[in-house]
Each structure stands twice: as structure tokens, then as C-alpha cells.
Length: 382
Length: 123
Image (tube, each protein chain N blue to C red):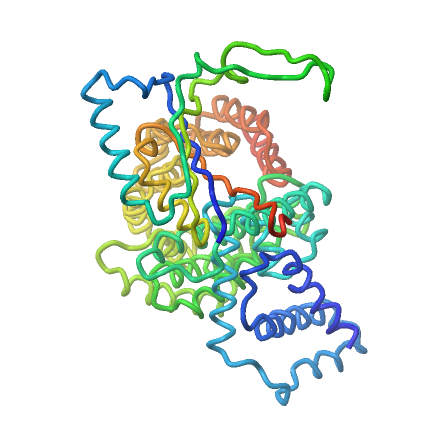
């Protein structure tokens, strides 16, 4: 019972305390119960090794406890999602609100998850809630006309959350499973609630296909294992299967102009379907990158495409493609890729110079350890 | 219903009291059309003379202190406040939809700010 109470507290009650006065959902209890229940199950699962908690888990799973009518729950949760991810809120505020309100993390947990001091996070959340309340950010599902645009900002928030967990930009660990798990859960919500919107299936497909490689991405020391060297038997078959089915749905839904996330999921699919690195269909990967470039021409996409170009046409062509990348927020990655391509081209001193330039920029520590190894390789072979 | 101020910012410190160019006349006609379209939500508004006619007022030494004035606006910025509207709307989405129809939204910028209602719970 204490567990359930904690969960209710955690999940949403506090988050909603200062929610806008007029916009309180007519049936808040209905979905609060569901959110709290899921949260409690998570708490129980986290502690599932402790035998005394198992009985509590069973109790929470008790099918005799009636669930609220799904349409009510769906509507309230959806409205909350669209409020938290309203485009008039800053992106940082959106991700924080999503974790706090939609995922039911405490303020301290959100602060840890997004790597900011708790006081800063508390201030950021208070500011966001105050704007929602006094500027009256509406608490409603957008109309059919508005939905595509508004959904873009919701999907982008969830994707950002996942990416920060999948490839942490700062800190000691490359992978932050807490964030990827929450992002996948939100993505699943969105797909369940809006299954016919293109984008929801594409995003969930992408996240599942990326996450399927999770168990093989780091070695026992927490160091990066390149895709080329990963033990593919460690990939999560169930996630791949589900991701592929969803990708099929997403691509069928937008046959002429694939959605941004479906396209990225297609690239991920090329990798997860290949039994070995050597058998990767790089022509297919490259043509999906060309599609992606047409939909979303960003420095990050150009950078990843340059890697595919190198696989198809050789490292020199890849280096040439790299010239057109432009400025990327994560400058360390551009230099690291340049180092890899120069390394492949056999230009070891130049590769070492590029790797050193990558090290000089701020970046994730696991990634920096990988680059240091490559520099040692260059030096050893010179 | 909440009220919002739509603060209009433009560059070049234009003087809207003199409609001396066809462009200005055309823009003023656009404002006229906007005012008619938005009459249901409009609670007030004004166009301001250029910042060169403005005076910044401050009391030296705090409340009760000496009145000190300086010529021009408080902050030197490339974009200056040239006018505002006051809307009463259901929510921020509606206020933004109206603000987006103000001519300055395509030639300058419009900031939408909620207005405090001291009569109600100001939270």
C-alpha cells in the first residue's frame, strides 16, 4: 500500500498541484490511477529481486481492480502530452515536463536524468508550469488541422529524450537506459493513442530498432563497441521484430513521402537485418540517407550519410562528402568521423590529427576513451 | 477570460504619425483591416511615436527620490516597441492566432504576454 501511495505521489499528483486552475481535466483521477499504477509497477520491478516486494507486485497486477474507461484515459493523457509539449514552451522545459508529468519522475530524478542541479530543475519546472497557468496554454488535443504540426513537436521531444539516453552528450556513460526506457514508453503511448497519425509508428519503430542493439553497444568495461564489431547475437530479436512490423505500418502509411522517423528506422533496419557487418547492404543504407536528406537536410544527417558514402564508394568519397557537412553542435563527432575515414584511407598521421582535434572538443567520456584507443592504433602503425 | 498584450516590435524606429510613403499607407491599410477583423477580441491598443520622442523616467535613490529623466528609450536595441494591442481570448493559442495576423508579425515581431488581472487570483 505504501508502495502504491508513493507511486501516486510520484506519478502525477504533485505535478498537477500547480496545474492551471481552469484546465484541470474533468476526469483526472481516471488517468492518474493508470499512470500511478504503471509507475508503481516500475518501482516494484526495480526492486523485484527483493522477495517481499513480489507480493506487492502481484497485488498491483490484480485484474479485479477496475481500470477506468480507456477513451477517458486516452483523452486526458493526450491533452496532457500536448500541453507539456506545447511549442510555446522551450525545448528544455518540454523534456523536463515530459519526464516529470508524463513519466512520473520526481523533480530530483528529472534533474539527474537531464544532468542539471536539482534547484535548477525545480526552477525550470516551476517556470514552465507558471507559463502554462498564467499565459493559459490550452489543455486540449489539437484540432485535426493543427494536429500534424503539433505532433511534430511532441515526437521531437520524445526523440530528443531517447537520443540523450542513447548517446549521452555529456557525462561518464554513453548510454542512459533510464531515458531511453522513458522515451520508448512515451512513444508507445503516442502510437497507442494516435495509431493512424504518420510519425507515431515511425518513431516507435525507430526507437525499438535502435534500442534492440543496446546489449551489444558497450563492452564489460563500459567502452564503446562499434557496430562493425558488435556481437549480433546479443541484439534483442523481439524488439527487432516489433520494430520491423511498425516500420512496415509506417511506410505503408506514407508511401510517397516517408516520414522523418520512418526513414531513420529504415536505415536502422538495414543494419539490424544484416547477419554480419560485411553483409550490410550499404547501397540501401545510402539511398535511405538520400531520402532522409531530401526530407531533413541537417549537418547531423550529412555526417552520417558521409559514413555510408565511404562504405559504398570508399573513404576518399566519404571525406569529400564530409566537406559538405557544415557546422554541427557536436563538433567532436565530425572530427572523430574524419579520423575514422582518414584511418580507413591509410592516412594515419592525418587520422591521428583529426582524432586529437575530436578529443579537444567537449564530449562524452566513453566516446573520448574510444578515440584515445584509435590514436594509439595510429601511432602504433605509423 | 484571460487578456493578452500583443507588443509590437519593429526595426528602424518608424514614425507611424506620418504616412509619407505608399508602403506606409499600404501597411496602415493592413492595420485597419486587422483591427476590423479582430474587433471581437480587441480590448484596446495604441500606436506609439518613435523612440526619439520617448523619455525614460527614474527616481534617483529609490522611492521619494529625485526624478531623473533621460532622452529616448531605456534600452538601446535594434528593434523597438512601436505599439500594442490588448486582446481577450480563450487561451494562448487563440491569442497567438490573432497576433500572427498583426502586420508587424511579418515585417517585425510581436510578443504576446498575459496581462495580470489583479481583480482575480493573480497566482
